[in-house]
Length: 167
Image (cartoon, rainbow, N blue to C red; front, side, top):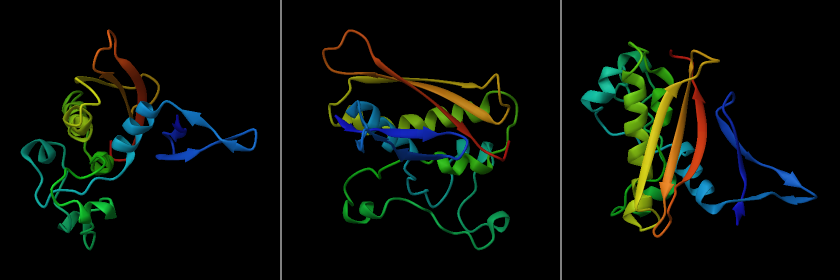
């Protein structure tokens, strides 16, 4: 068991919970998925065409004057040969909702990218990702992550949501 991370979509942050005077515990796979998704991954020097399509721009551009912070986890500086930890979900905070699908496609790509290590390390044989706009809040995307573990007949599925202001 791992320490449970309780995600607060409205505040875009996770926290630990105390139960009976001790830290609450949770499924370790769920914890790994949450850390992968909600830890800020370093942004690339230049956005991909898919990033640009939703207005994700390179750090330090005119729209974000002075903000050339590419974020990322400090421990990645010591792991030059490994993929960076976390996701670029934070870059979507200023995405522009153009139509109904393009931001959801970018979200799906970002989620695939951050969860790839589960397959590379043999934790999962495959991962399924479904994204959709929330029926309750126009600036909230919901996503389901299905993780197929080796030898398992069915995936473990985890549901999350992400709200941001740029939509």
